[in-house]
Every structure is written in structure tokens, then in C-alpha cells.
Amino acid sequence: MPPRFVLSIDAGTTGNRAMLFDRDMRVVARAYRELPVSFPRPGWVEQDALEIRDGCLAAAREALAGVDPRDVAAIGIANQRETVVVWDRETGVPLCPAIVWQDRRTAEFCGTLDSAFLRRRTGLPGDPYFSASKLRWIREHVLLPESAIAGTVDSWVLWNLTGGRRHATDASNASRTLLFDLRSGDWDPELCALFDVPPSMLPSITPTGGDLGASDPAVFGAEIPIAAAIGDQQSALFGQACFRPGDAKATFGTGLFLVCNAGREVPVSGELLATVAWRFGDETTYALEGSAFVAGAAVQWLRDGLGLLASAAESEAAAESVSDNGGVYFVPALSGLGTPYWDPSARGLFIGLTRGTTRAHLVRSVLEAIGYQTRELVELLGAALGVPISELRVDGGATANRFLMRHVADVLGIPVSRPEMAELTAAGAAGIAGITAGMWSSREDFAERLGARRRFAPSGISRDAEHARWREAVERSRRWAS
Image 1: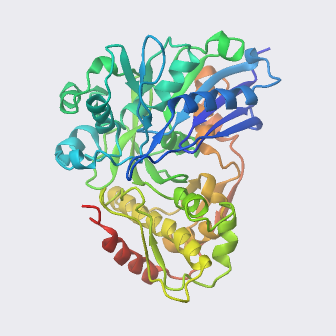
Image 2 (image 1 turned 90 degrees about the vertical axis):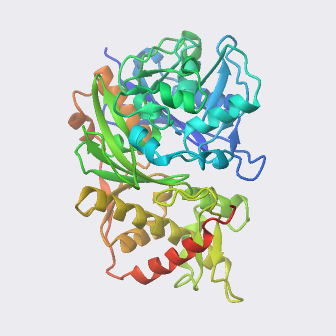
Image 3 (image 1 turned 180 degrees about the vertical axis):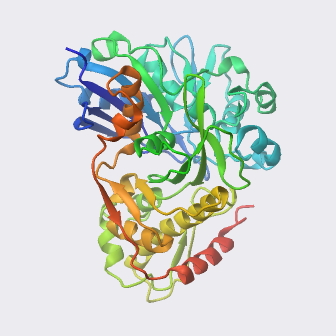
């Protein structure tokens, strides 16, 4: 009997998820391990690379419990991007904490970079968000042996799944490092020299879907082919079946990421990021992307940092308990501002507080800010494409919040479409792995199995005035830390 399942490992920022899908893209099993994040200094964001590894493997083993690993056609990996791990090639032991994509410690150095040059070469500006300056910082501050190697989280997971036999990354992740030339499709020696990163430390670059090795038999009890690795946002783009140029999706997770299929030519934009969507064989599909660093993370901060919520789900009822935001606006610059500002010195801001401000107003203003960020990105994408976006496909954990989805539809003035399956990041990696392994005959065959969607239509109430007011608040938050 041919294999019946595909295993997807989604190594995210706040947790590691494993999902087992059958041929009809039904979820047969799922498991999750929360992933701690530490903030040792202001602007620093770190994780324990061993906790990333252990969480991924534990979730995968739980999802596979009771399943013969020989019934699994392939494994697909999706991952938080830009986060850097450095480990010893000989021992497999991490040599320092992983520096997370939200980390801003290299902001001063990045301020010296020629962003125009970097955009032409890589599609990305010189910002601490991306991997290269993080790796440079590690090389300056950590005594590394000659056997030190580096990679983004996909490389680290792949290394551990294969028992240290494969040090590789896919093109979508490589394109997020500031070390990758979009046009040559490979590591750029000039950029490696600029960031003082020896190319010998870096993983080989593979297609997104293909032969990435196999899991070590000791990991799951038998070898399972690894047939996909892809950055989480590109994975969600694939999971949303955005296969045609102009198809766009927004993922509401830790951050907010709007990504659009840009076709086979390298796109050019002065404000949006140009990146690799995926590569199959020698065929590369590119994407345009807008990135807001904090979305769902702001709700998590209300819960864990301020104690205003017992759970993230409670935010919906809190926001709906008041008729408006009470004149309060929130700027979620907790890790600086991304697209279109690229201001690492911006800081989070509540403004408009009065004696009448309540907990509910604060919660509502945080959710509303996510909607206003979405509008910023959608308008930029429409301008880059030359045509407005007529409908926005959405996914991610925060899309379960119905208040937020209705607010986003109102702010944009267009319908918002949410699939029944919220975990489109995991689904995308599963789809690529399954197509590569022959579980599905084509992308269209895969897309037909993704299920129904729910549409949130705009109410017709204009939110232009509130959005303009929020833009004023954004300007007041900028350049604060500088």
C-alpha cells in the first residue's frame, strides 16, 4: 500500500507545531509545544536552540504516535524566518542562544548600511530584522571554533532530523538573510564580506521542494523522506493556493505579513520587500511582502506582560464590550516598525488616555491597530501592482478573533476570506512535500482539498478618519529610541 500521510513540522516563533495530513488534507493528528522567548536586554530577543529542536521533535513524535512511519510519504518543514542559530558541526551543540528575527541589537550597525544597494542586490533593506547582522554580531561577541556553522531555523531542524547529515536551507529562507543575491539565486561573496560571514559557515541552498534527505531512523523509528523546507510566510502563501501573480494573503501570527505572488521576474519596490516565494528545480517564483513585526504578539503582551487578559481569546469579548476605542490608539512598535517605515528606533505607544479609559479600550485599540497596519500594507501592495486588491485571504491564529476580522474588512473596505483550517503555514509545507512525493498530482489537485472558507464582508462604515488618526500616532512613536 502506498504511503497515506504527510507530516508537517511548523517551527514557529512562539511554538512548534506538528500536523499529520491524509490525502484529502484532513488533519489526522496534531501536537504543539510552546516555545519560550527571552528578552535579556531591551531590544534583545533570544531563544534556546535546544528548546527549538526538542519542541519540534516532541511535537512530531506525538503527531506520529500510533502511525507506522513507513505510512508517511514525506516531511515538510516550515519555519520562523531570519532567526539565526550557530552550532558546532562536530558535536551538534548550539554555541550561543538563537537570535530571533524580532531582535534589534544590531540597529546601530544597520544604520550605517547602504539600504539602496542592499535592496538592488537582495530585495531587502539594511534592517536588524534580517539574519546577516545577527550573524555578524555573534561572530564579534562569541568565541567560535573553526567547526562553527550557521543557519536559519529550517537548517537547524533539518540538521537534527537527519542526524547531522544535511546542512542546507531552501531558497525562500536564504532570500531573508541579506546574504543572498535574488538574481543569481546563490550566496553573494560581496555581501558575505560586508557582514563578515565566511561562506563556509553557511548551508547549501536547495529548492523548496525536492530531496532534502531523510530523517535518521533513530528519530522516528524509520527513515522518512524530507521533501520540503520553506519560510513560514511563503508556506502560508502556498497553503492559501496563491499560485497566480497578484494572489495575496495576510498571515496574522506573532507578526503581520502580507505576501503576494509576484511571478517569475524579480519584482522591484521601493517600500515592499522582494523575496523568493519558492523554487522548484530551476524555476523560481518571487513575492512582494510587507512586514509588521508585532500583531498577535501585542495581544500576547497584554496577557503576559500587562496581565490585562487571562487568555488571548478573551480579547474578542473585551473589544466588543465597548462601542469604540474611547479615543485611544495603539502603535505596536514593540520591536520597532517594519514596512514601510523601517524604523528600529520606534517604540510602542498608547495615546489618547483619559480618566475614562478602561481595560476594554486598551484591548480594543490593540486589535484595531492590527487592522490599521493591514491597511498600510494592502495599499502599498495595490500601488506596487498597479491594481487594487479586491479580496484578502487571511490565516494565522489571530484570525479566530471575529472582532478583528470584521474590523480588518471595514478598514480595508474589501471582503476578508478565512479558510476553515487556520494553520495554513503547516498546510503549505505539507502541500509542497506531498506534491514532491507524489501524494498529489499537481498544485491544483492539492488546492481542491483545502476546504471551505468564511467571508467577512465590510459593513460599509468608513474607518478613514480613525486610520488617519492612527497614522498621527505612528509619527509620534518614531525615532524615540534614537
